[in-house]
Image (tube, rainbow, N blue to C red; front, top):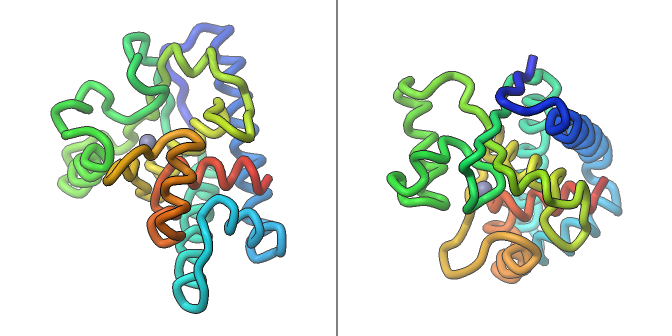
Length: 200
Ligand SMILES: [Zn+2]
């Protein structure tokens, strides 16, 4: 079972709702893979490509979504409240964020810990107070569901925060990565989060 740590009863209602809705969104996304809607949203969120480039990027995204769905269906992750967490809404091992170099380097840092076996088996997703001031859902900005899916994509599918060359968060970040093409966009956690909110 997924474990939720450190939340008040009121916060727990909010977190549980984001968790359930994320699960529904992932089920829907897995079902709709390959449909014309799925392809249209892919173009809008990940950008345009042709031939084998498009096929590779589409299957990379499908693999990520399947891995996320398995993780949430198996409920094999923890979610922990981090009251001092202010610079971002959710992340893993937030206390080591500066030490690791931040952004994509942080994800690499965590992957290395996992491979060495020195990380706890169930690294928690950490949610700060900001999580509770966000809208539950928003098509054009960050939201609780998008944030939950963004973080889950790091956990389950090894996505990164691709700040190499500019912004990687919010609609601005999504559009920047989209402009660089689907190959990079499908690896950026924020694009995966927005794709899922849009497709479901
Ligand atoms: Zn991230």
